[in-house]
Length: 315
Image (cartoon, rainbow, N blue to C red; front, side, top):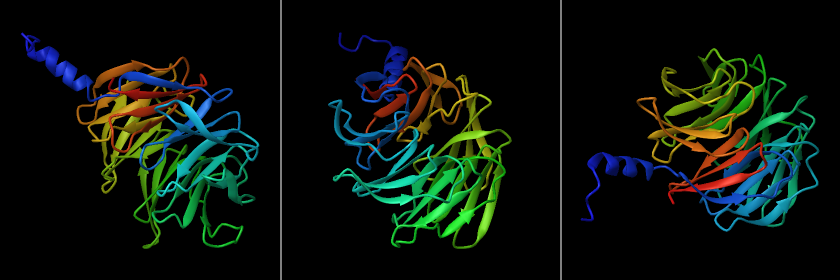
């Protein structure tokens, strides 16, 4: 009979189908490590950046490069953020410069420099893409007015005691994570700063899709989930290796599971509430540098120090 499978087996299959466990495509176009991968806003395309100083726009399903953005960055690419209308994106890296790019023309529109003294780890737009924020190893965050031709930042935040590794801008709140072990929330309108003391060096940060939680990756081999409103630590996740590199992490589209890379090339899935490992992928040969979850489908991308990017689907 068609329904002869045991209920336990069916439950396991149903749970597995919720994860993008199938390596549907491998994207190869960078020479050396791929440091970042990001979907565009509708998930049809993706952007990758690497140690080779290049950025590529891909059709990930076909595995083809549509356009390359080269010749501007002098060091490795460390982060990319895409504008909601997909017409522009920003990039940053080891050369202490952030660039604003025209996607279709493949050229730079703006160059933001001479404000950071060390490498720029992350960039993020505000909600209407009128301001670009950059986070740096020089213990600062800069804000750049994209409507003005002023080449100086309109604001520089220096509340940090170590490198600023990640930045998110949501609802006029600037959320910045630092190697000093703190998550700081800057309320621009109210002029207030709230600090969550994590106590361990933070290298990556993302937030839940409902915006209520903040997930940080720490150098003590743990991911930690914090309530954005109260600052309470809701859960921690372990089993992966994360002690020396920036390792990618995110949440699934329904916020039911935490996804995290590992320095040994594996990708882990944890139940968000229970905190237990529910699935594990032998994804790459070296550290997983970045993970991007599709905005609407059960699908994700992972990049690695092994030079590859993989598209994961349900099969």
